[in-house]
Length: 374
Ligand SMILES: [Mg+2]
Image (cartoon, rainbow, N blue to C red; front, side):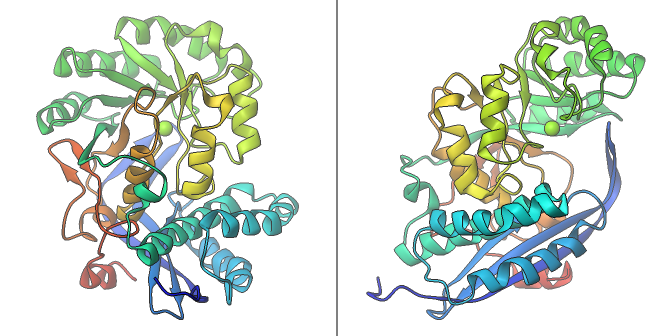
């Protein structure tokens, strides 16, 4: 290791886009394209770190993210010493939090910082010559469990059966498409997976009354959790615990450690799902998941993006307390931003390989990257 720490010479957003054969549908809308935004940080030592920022929604999010990273974040990092990713993540949050409030753009700012944070952890690991999971104090693990996500509303039975056959440890069905359809889909999935664990996700799709009406059917189907039953700005979340007999999951749309603590202390969530590409990176997700207020929660990081963020999620998951962590989320729909970018896949027989190389431990395929717009 060099005695003088390297300095950051550039921070570059890399927007990517891939077509989807079949749009991904959920209660809040459709994804017709796979959008992605990588973040590349270069240093005067020649070492390059790579991260990923969440840009799934809206369709124009990549344009905003490129501007936020180039104009808002890049000037704050050029010339900075690469040492502790936590220090630089904190600097960015401190400098940008009030701008985010003034702009009314807490989400985009946190998502942009997330991408940078992932690249900083990748850099830190590469400079030390160790994987990120080791920097986080995790023991060596070859594989971590995954559950199949992205099922429904069309053909959920077939999807569920394919997921079980592929070796996933559980499946998650999207609900919130109308009572009749939800009930039919729950029945199809239950029949297809037999005793495999089932999770459900309403993607903020219900009112409290609708949630109350659906609760018995979810219980009947043996749902192990209901995710985001209400819109995250709905005050009726305080009553959700009385409506469902199963644990309530959420976190993919919460920003900042204080917000997570408030939700946990208010008893709103029993399964905690921060997303490393949204909540403020590995730094924020690790802090949230291991905070005292999360001590009673089950830990199930959200993920629905490309290869780089998935690798980061696996490193994070490997470092969580084994007795409380659940599984890593894995969208079973085809995703070129995940599959094409890596020569060595992360998914192995329904489980996820924990990369062993320095940093995030992945090597992106340059040709695929160019084809996807990078
Ligand atoms: Mg979800």
